Length: 204
Image (cartoon, rainbow, N blue to C red; front, side, top):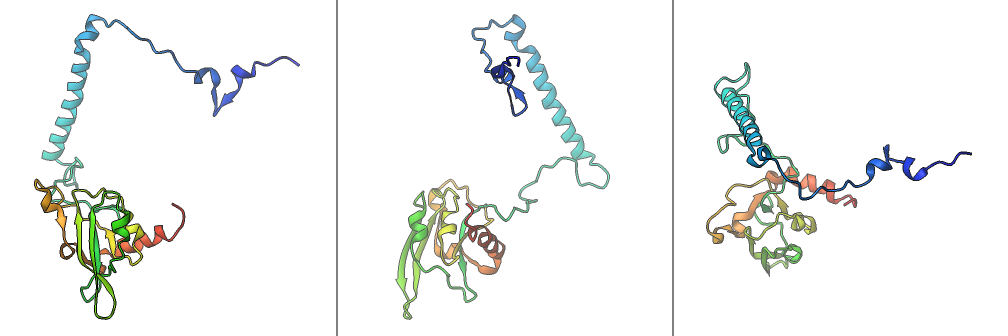
């Protein structure tokens, strides 16, 4: 039986070992005068930029038949995208039909928040039910991780599709109180059903 050079002939994922060997990096290469001037690269870059500019300009002025325009730019705020249900926007508190919050002020979201963006002051009603007399969310610290949504046992806080008004010059304007965070359960129904589907499965 002839000896086989298995080391050099054995393929990995259809690629020979010879091709998988690391290539040597050539250092201290002297560039030619043409390469040092970067003339060709500058011309090529200007060509690509000009091509995109004129194609977009013509597509905006003379759109194809049956279409509003050729380019796919969204003209915000006149136009807005329909965000996917998995999008994580500003966390909001879910309100019952009577307008009261579903939150029972258990403090789990406050505890798990890695940015310490949530602050809760809990109180009890006459019937013994706990509720947050104060719920403050500091969006200047929020990292949109969704941990608060995941840990909540009452589905009282969810990541909404809201993204407007989150860029402010004054950080104090990014502190949202309970009253500003409350949203009807109907308005976040799709998100609640989504998180029920992903968090009910122990596959993450």
